[in-house]
Image (cartoon, rainbow, N blue to C red; front, top):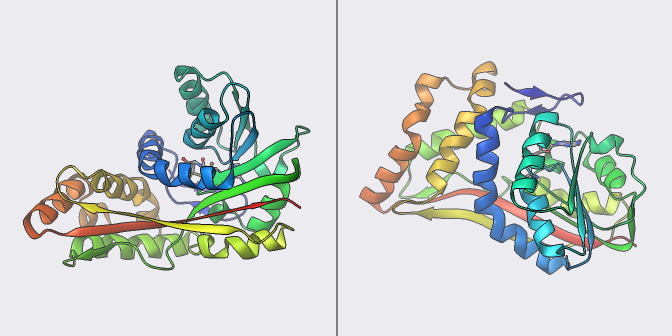
Length: 278
Ligand SMILES: C[S@@+](CC[C@H](N)C(=O)[O-])C[C@H]1O[C@@H](n2cnc3c(N)ncnc32)[C@H](O)[C@@H]1O
């Protein structure tokens, strides 16, 4: 099911069990990028961190590991079901320094003073990311860290050499659905201007690509599961059909192409930016 939010933006990946699973798979791929961003930003033991749009809790879990038992993490998400998943994963991982709050970050009322505000793949879903950033950093102490990692299509994605028509088609459907869903495609590049408008200092930045191929590359399943999560919204918007996507064999077909032709796929790009509150 698509999640049409009150701001008119469709969370085009839906909120199925499959999507929750996809988020944790994506998180495993993005973990090194996110860790590097947080290390560069200065997330350190003892800090109190606010994670905006926690989803299944992967960023909060990473932050909890980095701040250690003397620090703490508060995760916020407007989706009650996914918050429950995040809570049970935190419990199963043995972390008792994470609290999850089920609320829209734009309505967040919290008195704690945080040392850092972080988020991944969340500003791109806001009608006005500046409003969200202002609200999220309201309880950040002066000098505190702001670090976001956002998906960005500016430099492409769905690229392959030799060219794979399968991946090119998936990318075309993906971009069309993103546009129809009113999700921001250039959020990574827009992070500095959003930070500035929210009263924050100009950030330092990093870019990361999900690129690979060959046997057993996790990127094949990442593409398949992303297409599976998006399929209901793609069909709803008339972008493509289940018959055309043949989602059940997508990962298999991409791997076969890579093994046969040596194809390398660059499936997505991510941009991180970190700064401090003045
Ligand atoms: C693509 S998921 C990313 C989850 C997580 N940050 C990660 O990278 O694994 C985006 C999440 O942000 C949440 N979200 C989006 N806008 C929000 C808002 N204004 N307030 C709270 N949660 C929000 C959605 O419900 C969803 O769970």
